[in-house]
Image (cartoon, rainbow, N blue to C red):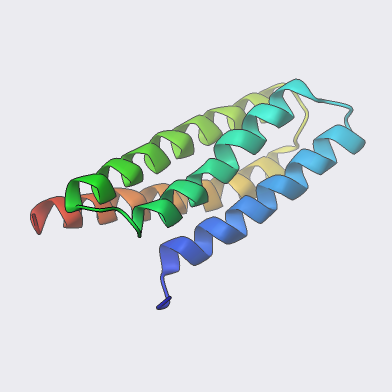
Length: 117
C-alpha cells in the first residue's frame, strides 16, 4: 500500500490508545471508561483502513465519516478521563492533540472526496 499519512497516524494513535488502556487498567484500576476509549480509539484506524477498500466513493466517504464520529467519541472520553483525574493535563493534552490532528485530516479528506465526486 502506498504511503498514507492518515493510515500511519491512525495506526500510531491506535497503539497509543492500547497503551493508555493498559495504563488505566494496571495503574489506575479503571476498567469501564478504558474499555470505551479502547473501542472508539482503535475503531478510528480500522474504519480509515476499511475506507481504502470501499466499493465506491460514497462508501469511502461513509467509512471516513464513521472514523470521524469515533474520533469525536475518543475526544470526549479523553476529556472525561482528564476531568476525573485519571489522566493529568499533560498526558491528556498529548493524546488529545494526536486525536485532534487525525480529526482535522479526516475532515479535510472527507471534504476533498466530496469535491471530487
